[in-house]
Length: 281
Image (cartoon, rainbow, N blue to C red):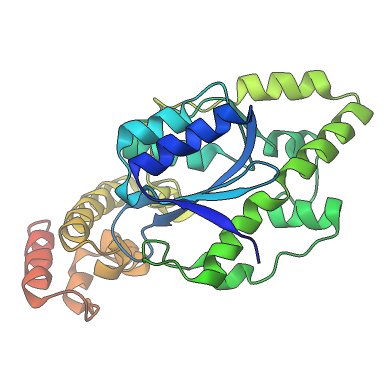
């Protein structure tokens, strides 16, 4: 079992940064756990896992200020090894307005090496012959809960455990294939565009693209109404109206009369939701 230090206050985080400076630590492995509309409304940073090659740390951001998180994540003096950092970078920018700096994303190397399996677990299995267990169990885990279960925390730490050795092995493969320059170009061209407007996944789906123009406009209106109700109740939007019924309503708005609500949706909010949708008739 991996031992770790929990950082759950501004003071803890300040002491952590002092520890980095005192020990001349200039590179760490880092990963996030977040909530993405599975258990509550919206996207939220829930944990930051860190490994410096010798010690593990877990930052619980719930009681930490935005400014202290920014000082840590925007610090250019400490390089942060991630695997596929794009969604993590966008998450903290959307939630806190923080633009992560000095990120070393190993996924760039995997992409130019054209691996068949490009998820972190597949790469670890291929290069280190290690299988990460209990993956499916924690894909739906509620990381907003406190305290985080012991097994869940150990699973979260496994995402940073192997990043140092992966970095070395991947870079060696890049050099062997004479792709160092290609890697540099890729990292420059694919840097995170923080100012790019985020489009909800449902509005980029093939199901949405296959709708007629009028159906697309109707779906967007229903989508916005659903979002507002979900935000008020702090529940996942899919709990207010499942995706399947959302698309059905975009093709025939009258199908809302057959909508079966989840028990977590109070009658008052059900009536409010239906009233708003009937205005679209």
